[in-house]
Length: 247
Length: 247
Image (cartoon, rainbow over all chains, first blue to last red; front, side, top):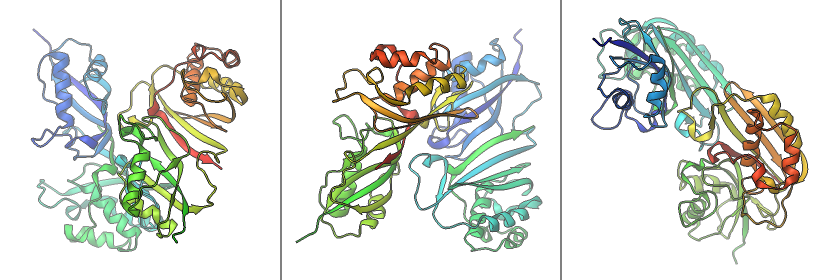
């Protein structure tokens, strides 16, 4: 009798040419490419469970997913075998066997995202698919002050895409840092989980603070209003990278 | 009578989807895109003079070119006007009027290129078009020792693509540094000029030193042999960026 193994994959991908992680009818997805590669290696279709549903155009350096297989290939070798069938914009960084109870999404206790803004007088040609170009002058200190109001546990209804339904909009943000490195401004956000478009709306709202459309202390009012219309716009997907999923 | 102006452009481009700087019959070139944009702005075709012929897939952050026009648009405004007609992978960073005698190629007294290698156990998905993935362990100190032999004025016939004809293969390399930043290894090379594929063959030869195929002191012998067959292979175009052209 074949033994079923639970295989955990750590993957990096460039989301530019995909409709997101999850299978869709309107385009190719990362999930589909991983499932096709697994079927090419094992000969059997295995559904892959992803740690989150990243949007179209969003990238990942540390996406986690898992699948069950009865195939006898040594678990660590799935990395090399799957990479042989994956396109160049998706890479398996690590493969290993985990406990049968492990579930990429349910067991996740947190995630870290990084959003990169290029702030200057010229839109970038190189790396344009991995950053958001913003040409107005940004006050970093104002944005840093504003970022403090996001920390902790709040109902983030004002920071989720309208129409998205979840049991609760309460989330905890553990860390939010803003680093400037030349023309690059990086927003690093760690939380126990994120609502649909939450990171992108938080960054959009911080940019509004950076150009003095909002005051730093307005963030508190926007959060307590629970009204999406009060927050800033959602910045483009291309600047967002899922850096790490915590278990 | 219209006054002819000589306009110098500083441009950044992602060379991934182009056959190189120069117009070719087998694909789209950067030169063609710039000339088309100028014609869209001025209504007149102007031939653009480039500072060098970068190869297919090579990128530039500080490419310089110039063209003559009788158009009355303020020279500094060419930047914004041309960018309105250029694709997203080509950006004019600066436009200004220069002396009528200025010639992008003839007046150049040097160039700086940076070649980026990703060295580690995983090929990159993100940024794959801007780096060369090399999976064997590299000894940085050996490569640094070897790099000293390139400095100064030499006949670099061993480091030019066979079949390329130039008046002289003598060039001067002023600086060659190798920096390691995590998995990234950056080769920065400054010289008065470079032969066809010269930077890529130098980097390929240094990688051979890094994996102990060559000794650092072999570089001297390879240079004096003037024989292309003795040097390493030419590394892929995608890792190469023209950083700066000096006048």
